[in-house]
Image: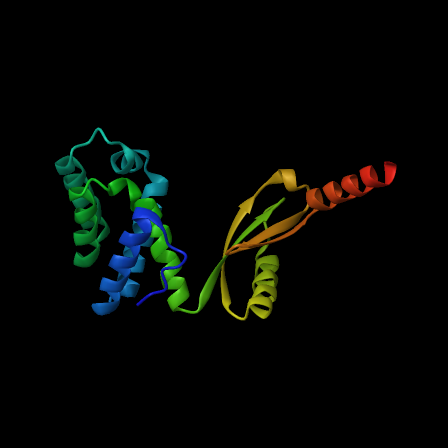
Length: 186
């Protein structure tokens, strides 16, 4: 059975159920591929996001819409059945969270760990490779790096892995210096 300690709520339960079913059917990679395609489609289509999130659509409308999307994407029957189940239970709104949780389960199965990296400026390919190697040495597992840019960091980066956070940003260093100076002034 997959480790469910990090999953919670409705999305976590659905993610664990479909992941375990995919394991039984030896279709974890297929499920992962299909959900990645859905994630991409959700990112690109405001209409699809509205269909998934808005409660104004009936079960049948959601089911028909998702069936058309999945057919066009060439999704496997397992994925199609799962999404239809979400539609029939009026739980389609949890699909983005289910996708995230399944990604986590797949990464864990592969011995990978997710790392969220926020930097002041976009990282170059060389910096990403160097960071990935450093994290692998530190964590002992292959990191899957998701990057974000936050100009308010001023410089450096913040790395989040699970519940751990490494803040090597210029903003954090300046805040620390400000705190130290305030303490010295009193």
